[in-house]
Image 1 (spheres, protein in one colour):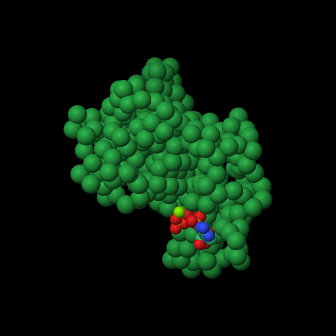
Image 2 (cartoon, protein in one colour):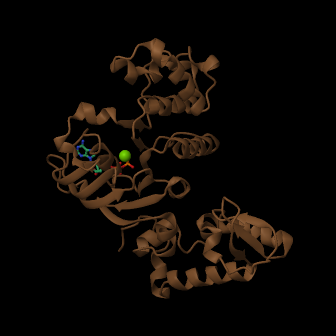
Image 3 (cartoon, helix red, strand yellow):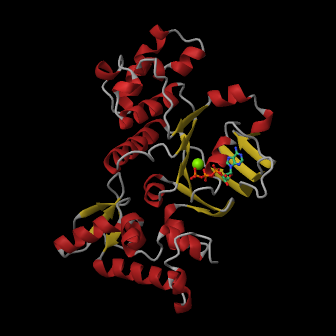
Length: 338
Ligand SMILES: Nc1ncnc2c1ncn2[C@@H]1O[C@H](COP(=O)(O)OP(=O)(O)OP(=O)(O)O)[C@@H](O)[C@H]1O
Ligand SMILES: [Mg+2]
């Protein structure tokens, strides 16, 4: 059962001429990170807020754990859903520890019972408890505050996390570090995460599943590889850079270029989830084919420079556009001019 499901969801704000979300349907797989990707005003935040009933659909249904949200008590529903927003929203007069345990406290758990959990969460997001527990939010950097926001969202151990551009205001290095930490946390604790971003690179880095929105509508839903390999429209193709060879190398897994390997094939070993780019660099360095191996060590096949080149040619052929369409490439808005 999908943890979160949108079924023909439409949301029209009072007095608005057009819906903010228009007949959107998709399901978030249990335990997946689903990225909502779209330009400003495309309806991402509106979709997210309908999951924890900060807003309700005008028509259609949002189902959480198989039950329509409108049939669920908002307070009980939100207890099972962590919510992280860009503007963090830490309570300035509370210490970091108090901020992290605010939800358990509201639920009536005494501090003595949650102390250990607070330290565990702070460590999880990369903050040394001894150093940060007693500080106030103003004594933390923006990136550190963002980590506390994440720890707080995890404190009640929700099965679902909603994240609305949580790393948007951070510098590239800190953002990358927090993205890495989120992936590590996700692998460890298996949350279902719905994550809003307008950053294509972030969507590709974090997403098991990417939902592309434009002008209130769902344009395409799929894995990063599906979006790259078979973009539904030219707008998606441009958005994800399906014709961008470097992006293909960065995100398509080495298994895209897999060839059979004989039983006694030898060579350097490359993990099956490694991107084509790292395989390419290794092949160029060694000048010999490499073996593609599963996590457990089983050999899945081999990869060669010629094999990678073939994949690139195939993708090129699939995403090639008629010359007349090239005039719109400079247009960065996914739908304008179409
Ligand atoms: N409370 C509201 N009342 C009326 N209109 C709203 C409200 N909130 C959002 N909108 C409108 O709904 C549309 C979608 O807004 P939404 O906030 O969902 O976009 P978004 O994709 O999250 O954009 P951004 O990337 O800028 O955060 C926009 O046209 C916006 O002006
Ligand atoms: Mg938004």
